[in-house]
Length: 183
Image (cartoon, rainbow, N blue to C red; front, side, top):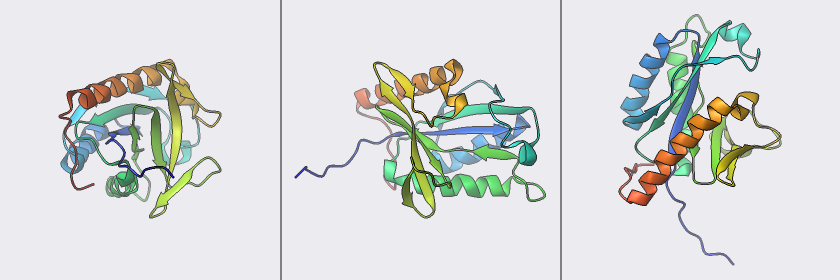
């Protein structure tokens, strides 16, 4: 029988997209109130890998990634998804979201994203939330699975995620990484 142990804390990330770049600043400010300081912000990228969101958000969407200094317990991901869903709802207009927040985390070996949608490759966490291992870290790089979204396969996204992972690994090596004690 294996020995039960606690996992290492993980790096919270929130990839987001919106049609209005100003919403990123609003969301970042609100996310920092909840999750603490942001220690990584990507540049703004075009989000054009699917038309799935066009009816709700329209065309010409923009993508941005943020990551948080304070590391979290991986089991808190469902609660994080509920927080980001509440923020999406708060920033909505006329019953339509204006920003999409897709929280997840980076560990040494993977990128995990939270979702409300079940599928064969997703694991139920709790409170209506599932987790998907979107990328695995293998041979010194993130690698996609057959189900990995097209945008998460792009060189731009992979470079961003590898930079966030580098920051995370440095935090672990330093041994004094800020860690949320309440998650």
